[in-house]
Image (cartoon, rainbow, N blue to C red; front, side, top):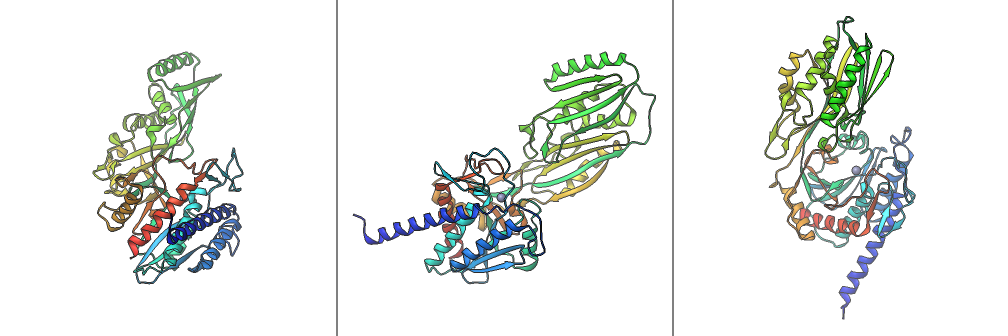
Length: 473
Ligand SMILES: [Zn+2]
């Protein structure tokens, strides 16, 4: 027979479980998609409603709370100079189409709560709040404050956290449950830039003239489409190009279609889209087309040189080897390069490139490594973005503590992770991503039918609770 204490504990857990599910549902039902800003609501009504809802909840639970000018907010328990931060975000990406259940309905089916933001990031927010509440109720003496910080613009420019850092104290150390388990201790640097040159001469005497080459939508996506328009002087060239194309397709297996309209040839190249952090998973339509064009002899001189550069120094490589920037280190591995867009016309040639560089390097080193090759072709760099790498060693206090709790609860001995992408952790110092998605699980983040498995939601609660106890006592 169960004794009284056990029954009390079980009942408390049942109540907590029901509360966590209920509050997650309520929060999902607030459609906190970025919308038209007003003076008091910099990210629109939905996000402001979610921020006020969550601060009211935390206040009711007995936390100290602060609403910071509509940009962000926090809720806090405990005393002490030092502070453990839990960084989360209330905004969600737009719902998109094709859902099996209403995206802001938060319906439960097969043990999962369905809704936009269920895993990214609302379920984990509620799990973290109730973890704090449980520690607060236990009357345990904490040697640090625990502060949950509510970001509001993670999915766009992360302005909410930038505002927080201007106005408030940065926690001593933090984790953000906005990625996957176990701990991500290594996030590669992420730079975006253009390689470009102007075309000055107009070589009309050539048999073939490239009017444009256009492909790709974003730097960090492997392009699945690219097309070019070529003007020819004499029609006899059509059959030559057609023959060459057939040979090329046979040899490479890629998919390029040719349309002829009098003296205009259009070539349409089809590839397979993928995330720029993992370009091997896709097939770059730009590379396929430019490598074919490189095999045609009679192109204009300057465009020819641009295409020649591509073929010699980029080709199908993802490592940056022939560009001279194939950097690697022993903690995060190889540099990864993705050509996201091409934009060529009779006046200029441009490539938009995304590089994920190893954590022990900087973007300046990467640029310097490419300099020699680019000079030979008269190419210039236009820097667009650099998000610096994140790295904490496996011996780091925070990494060790988080791994310890994870291993204890999950009963396995995993190693911290390296990723090519970036997480919310980069917005603050001494912060790592930790959860909420368990290895091998798919929560359909940013897709239709996003959900959170209720069991996983409660497991997150349990893990966060132990993390607070481990780090703050
Ligand atoms: Zn997120």
